[in-house]
Length: 177
Image 1: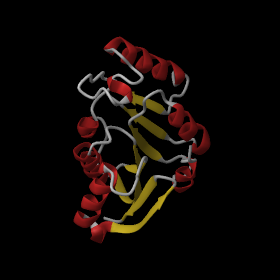
Image 2 (image 1 turned 120 degrees about the horizontal axis):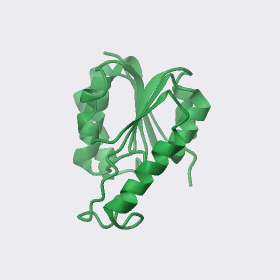
Image 3 (image 1 turned 180 degrees about the horizontal axis):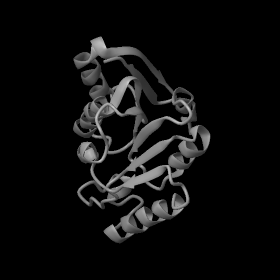
Image 4 (image 1 turned 90 degrees about the vertical axis):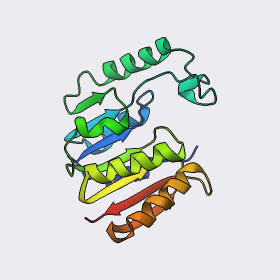
């Protein structure tokens, strides 16, 4: 497995950010311990979706909504003593009802990996991240849905992207609005 923690080198200590797609919170723990964010939002619907049986949340790992509720409860328990962490059990498309626009230093996208969902998460991230912030994410491979969505997003926002990097299946975009 490739190390994705190098992405955190781009996130300043005491910054504000959101992880979109939390699953069991392993990377969330790494984020919280490595950069000590002022605010760390963790967004995931923890919703069982049997129409996607090839995905963790549709049958390969969790096999029922009860399993997803248990994972959610474990994540809440994991961060119970971390006052900087706010768990948001909701779809990422609803993040503007939880977080002010242009208020985050970074987003980390690792949710639904379909083209449409990744493009929505990129566009949501653009609204949430302030100028000089980063939109980052996981599981980039040449030709996959994440690659296609990222290409679409970059083409639409090329004048606002100051720099970009792809390494170890991670993508990092620095945004200047």
